[in-house]
Image (cartoon, rainbow, N blue to C red; front, side, top):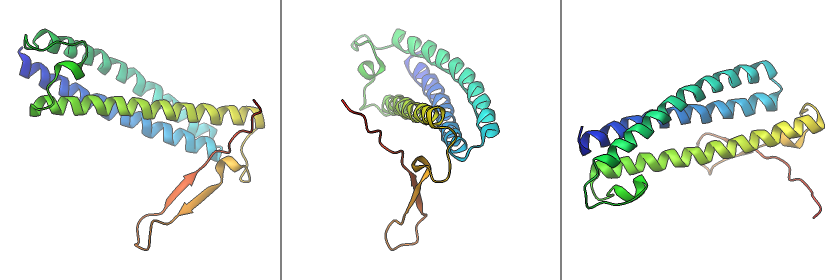
Length: 166
């Protein structure tokens, strides 16, 4: 296997990882909605699906590690670095594509982490205050119209800020 093949293989693995991470993020959004609406059975089912996706993701991450090591082995001698950001040349189209996929994975990791924190906060609120009711400020939604055009309506759900004394 050479540099180009290693790069192509890594790109395919990154695409798999992106698809799985997008599915995980979607699942987390659904879990949050199920928690907000009090659908505990649905929430539990979504959590089981999530755990199955995580198992698959771990396998893909392992493959990505193997393909990344191959890429480092076949890296041109004039390239030095410890991460993909450092050894891939953004000017070369195929390497730019790999870098874009790599950055997309990083962005999804951040989004998933934020969603986990949000769900953890919601769980804590439910644990402390009991099940959410329609009057609970955590599930008060606000409809926002986007201009005069007939675009889809955006519904936002805002969590109340905690008043903590320092």
